[in-house]
Length: 182
Image 1 (cartoon, one colour):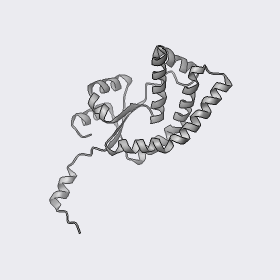
Image 2 (cartoon, helix red, strand yellow):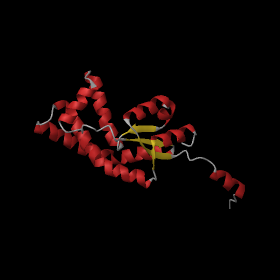
Image 3 (cartoon, one colour):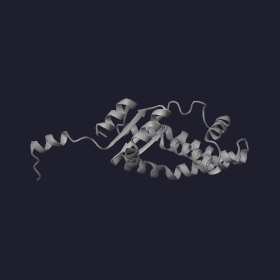
Image 4 (cartoon, helix red, strand yellow):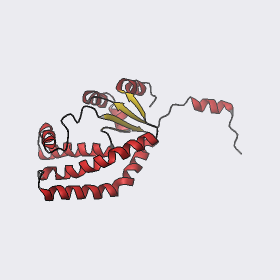
C-alpha cells in the first residue's frame, strides 16, 4: 500500500498542466506572427490553423501544389474558389489549433484511426472529380482532400471537446505561452 503525504499532494496541485489542447481565435496575421515569434514552441508541438487536421492537410496540399508547379499561391487559391473548393473568405475565421504534451500523441492516434476511411473517401472523390470533368485535373486530388476535410470537421470538433479543449483569444493564449503555462 502506497501512502502519499499531504505535502506531496499539495505540491502536485501547483504543477502546471503541460498537456493541453487550445483552440485560439486568430487572424492570418496573428498566426504568422505567432509562428515567427514562437518558432521553438511551434516546432515542439502541433500547431495549425484550420477547423480540423484534415482541413489543414487540404490547405497544405494546395500550398505544396503551388510550390511544386511554381504557381502563385494566390492564383491557386482563386482557382480553388472558382471551382467551389474554397469560399472567398476561407482564411478569415479559422482557429489556431494547438496540441501539446500527451495530446499530441492523442491527435496522432485520432489521425491513424481515421486514415483508412479517409483514404477511401478521398480516392472516391478524386476519381469522381476526374471522371466528371467539371474541375481542372490539377484540382481533382484537392477535391478528394476537401471532401475528407468536410467529413472530418464535425468529428474533429467532437474529439477536441471530449478532451476538454480550451477556447481562448489570441492574447490570452500568447500570455499563457509566455508565462510557461502551456
